[in-house]
Length: 93
Image (tube, rainbow, N blue to C red):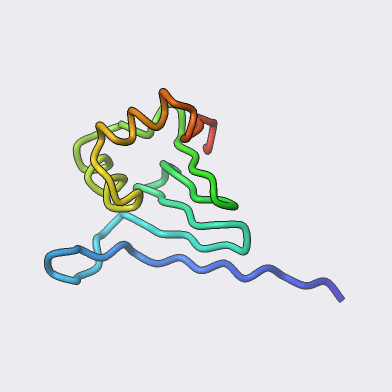
């Protein structure tokens, strides 16, 4: 019998109100945690590494707001980590 990996999907929650945020999702898999905005994967935390979608990581103000929340940092920090190689730009979609 095959074992099926457990995957959970939940809406992000607002830091201010604690309410669920529509169209902003956290996807937990055995491999890591992913952030999806609408139908687009934006970022991933897998095995201690951080990955950003090369074309969508900075798509809009709203996506950026929740990407910052997911990474727990501001855009300037994210850009610095991309340049340094700490974050890798990849095709997540």
